[in-house]
Amino acid sequence: MSKEQAKYDFKAMGQAIKEARLKKGCTREQLAQEVDLAPRYIMSIENKGQHPSFQVFYELVTLFHISVDQFFFPDIGAKKTTRHRQLESQLDELGEADLIIMAATAKGIQETKGTGE
Image 1: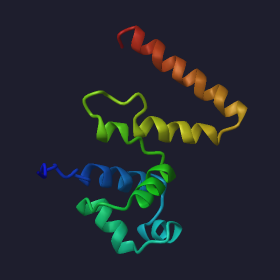
Image 2: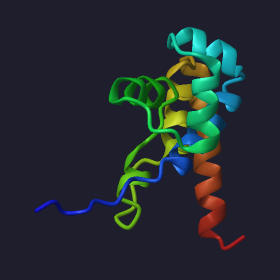
Image 3: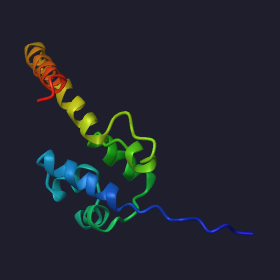
């Protein structure tokens, strides 16, 4: 009695990996070298939705701070999206003076939203 299981469509996740790689300014060849894979395999993951091994999947999503919740549980709504995690990673690299500027900017955005503009 085998129950037929739907196969996960990895294309959206592959596109998120590609977008994160490009945003970081990393070429496919550089990424492949960093994670010890062939550039063609990276291309297949990004463009064709190739299913990577769990280890490769883990390396890619942690390297680029990609939240998987938004892909596995889209109806629930992830608390932290990929964009949120990437921004958080960038903030981690800033100094205290830069963080003060970022906090003031965020506060200004929130106040503007509150006025209906």
